[in-house]
Amino acid sequence: MGDGEVMNSPRIIVKAPGRICLFGEHLDYLGLFVISTAIDLHITVSGSLRADKLLHIVMPDLQEEERIDLTKPIEYQRRRDYLRSAVKVLQRNGVTFDHGCDCTLTGNIPIQAGVSSSSAFVIAWIAFLLSMTSRSGVKDRELLAQLGYEAEVKEFNEPGGMMDHYTSSLGGVLWLDCQEPFHAERIHADLSGFVLGDSLEKKQTTQVLSSVRERVQAGIKQLKHSIPSFDFRHVTLREVEPCLGGLSEDIRRKVRSTLMDRDLALEARDLLKSWSKHSEVHLGGLLTRHHQELRDGLGISTPKIDRMIEAAMKNGALGCKINGSGGGGCMFAYAPGCEQRAAEAIRSQGGKAHIVSVSDGVQVRVE
Image (tube, rainbow, N blue to C red; front, side, top):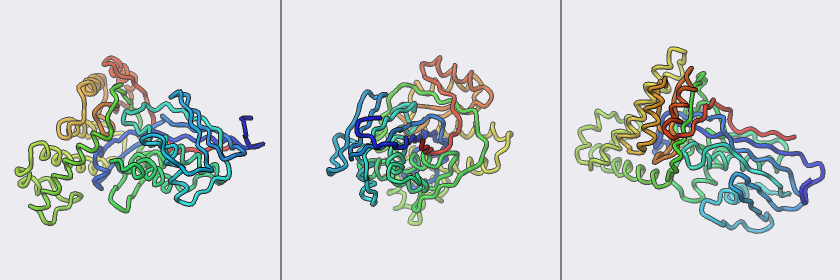
């Protein structure tokens, strides 16, 4: 028993998955559409209650540990202090803590690589904290996602949407309509054959998000002067095209690609809802087209990721794309039946490969 541990306290184990974004990078914060998939790489929090009100968190992967005294006001110790922001958000939402805990936080999700390690971290931690306060565990997974978004994004005024939090919390393949009120729908397509490729290039998430977001929103603002009824969710590229000439080349390219990516997400949703084995080649083609728009239009890929994609395509992948906000991080190959070949091809270009499967959402176990 740990120092101060409650006698006969059950051990709580929480796992939250990372995710890949099939379609919709840089669409969620614009109130558009995303298709995302939870994968079987996880952040895990495990521990038991203490008699006092101290949270003692050991993070061996980072060689760090933290102590949070729940009897005192929560004050942030660093930028993006998610351990403390989660506690603060829960307290703000009426959660009270009668006990602290001794716990360990570990994970196998690549960090700063576009696979939602930070959101999985926040979702796992909030689910653990909620499980500390109630033996009924976490029942409302959508509320959990919203709390995670509040603790990670809103609390620190960061750019980004709720895709990561919903995917980690709910799991599976999700169609996300990101316009308020946010809506998540499970798509029951039997997908397999994904290979995650980590370029080992650390990405600058907030910088890339801010840059793309600012330019697309500037384009929208200018287009609304030309098209008074402009609605980014429904306007067609054909309607917008005559007005794009008045925009700078960079903004024009990003607006056009955003509209193309929106249409690819809609086409992919229809494909996945009527899924059959014969749909695999079509899906691969849509993924590759999406990457081309992200690379050439939004400018978020890197030469190394493009080489990893090219190698995987030459070794049987049906489609590949960069994953996440871009500027480094991961790509993934859709390679049903030839996952090992695609993985070796990714490694040949200096990447780290993980063969991954679609995962359930957050899992809570009490022993």
